[in-house]
Length: 262
Image (tube, rainbow, N blue to C red):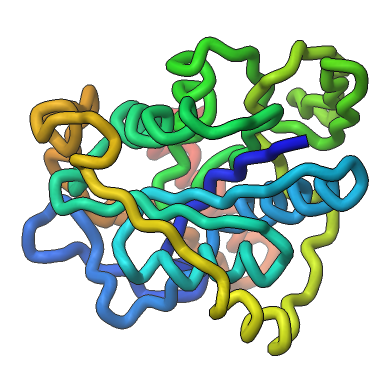
């Protein structure tokens, strides 16, 4: 089974102080640490597990700058057979649709039975690239996948729904699956694995290699353009009431009356 896994190199912002850049359309990244997107990490692990079980190959692919090589090397260290980076200055500002279009131009010429992506990316949370990619390639897709079983030209998947429910469906191969966290336990990548990954070829393709024009990528080809980014102002805050029980009860009553709630 030939599997393509799409990954993204993203900044880790969970415990970082995020500031808006001077252009007002992005964040300052100079002091941020970058790594593979969490959801994509599970997708990459699932791809290798399936390859080890069923045979075939795993190709990791990303749209990003040279800094994204570390994420691709991580996929190679985990067990991916090949890695492709799609890089060009013209790609700057591409939205989810254009990113999927760039990927589709390369993937359509590669052998594949499954395309795996993360359910979403931690930096923008759009959750659109995978499904748009499937539409451009004309293949079925499922998102929020918690379990998958390929067999006899189909793949049976468990798709996470709201309220802790799951839906089981069957898709005809080839198909695109957006992987949810928790589907597996991503393996620890050893130093030896990293050293071996550094020796593997990493293919780099640009705009001219994929058959698109500058007008079809970047902001000019995008459906969504970021006009402004800002940190929301704090409009509500908690107030801690002190004093005796009667005093606190009086304050609560006065507050409720002031707000027109009683």
